[in-house]
Every structure is written in C-alpha cells, then in structure tokens.
Image (cartoon, rainbow, N blue to C red; front, side, top):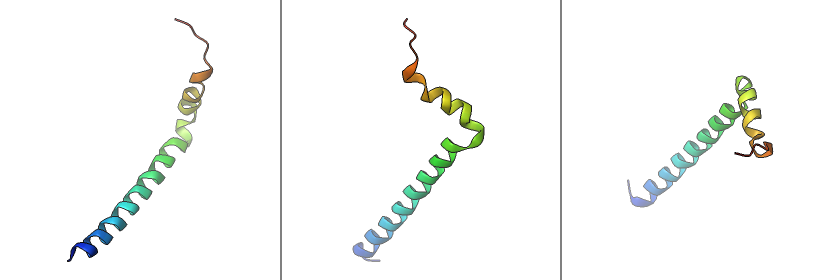
Length: 51
C-alpha cells in the first residue's frame, strides 16, 4: 500500500469514526432518561445564587 492509498484510507476511517462519535454524543445527550439532568445543567447560567 503506497502512502497516498494509506492517506485516503485513514482519512475515510477518521471521518467515519468522528461521525459515529458525534451521533453517539447526540444520542447520549438527547436520551429521554437524561432529560431532567440536562434541563438542570441548562439552567446553571440562570441561577442567582451568590456565595
């Protein structure tokens, strides 16, 4: 396998890997059982608690 073929294969593999990682992260964030946790974290900037 010459370097150009290896470069193309690695480029394709990395693109597929990052796409699957992105889809996995979306599934993790938007999974229905995590809704309350994500809503709580989304409201952190609006908390007006001073320490």
